[in-house]
Image (cartoon, rainbow, N blue to C red; front, side):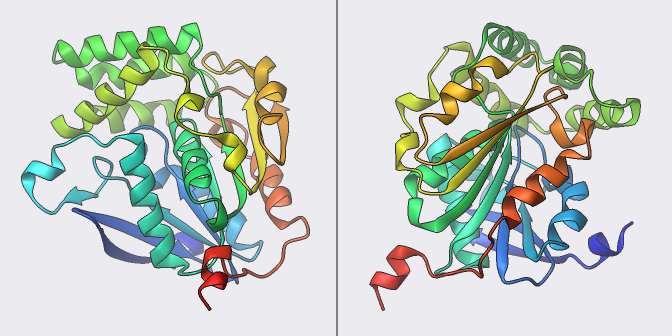
Length: 292
């Protein structure tokens, strides 16, 4: 266990009807909040902690309801799937708790990138920088097929096989240990967690365009999109077109598959360079300044 991991400050916060586990590392003036991918937990950011805290960012991890140790305050609420809007609300509660009245940087991967972008659109004054990894606003045919296959496994009561499906279809760029870890994690999900994946996959199967309910032009944060040129479920050739729909966005295409920093640890240097370029101490959010 690294020194950074040992020094994590852990707590539980209440976000509406949910209890959310939150962990922080570092003590810099800037705040970076990491947004998990679909049914990933805060553990997915373990390798990010040391690199990011060394840049002066206080790095914050958390689990959404139906992920990891997050839970509903009663059994009924804990078994309900969350919409994108509800996940945005949970993320807002975390931001309010760790950086009240301040702007933060966000980093999200895959599904977490969609939620991070949705948050930055809904709360543009609260986000200074935004990193979106493995980001595409509309599912490609391969992703829709994987989503259909995943939903079929859940319907047949074979949710424990989701890990094998995901690794086979888009996890080939990870080493054997990481592939085994993903498979093991998805074998241990509870019914409400499989339901969350099942319901989220519906948006992919139905080919719903993310931009039909999230306006990328509302995002004020300077944005970096990072996609892999070997990612079978993200069409990296459309990345430039996607970046052009933001107010301020750049992009990088890297030699990797879907699980970017798992496959290429050096991608963390790309993230750190973006976050620290002309970095200034955290400033009050615009809406917070207007209230003073």
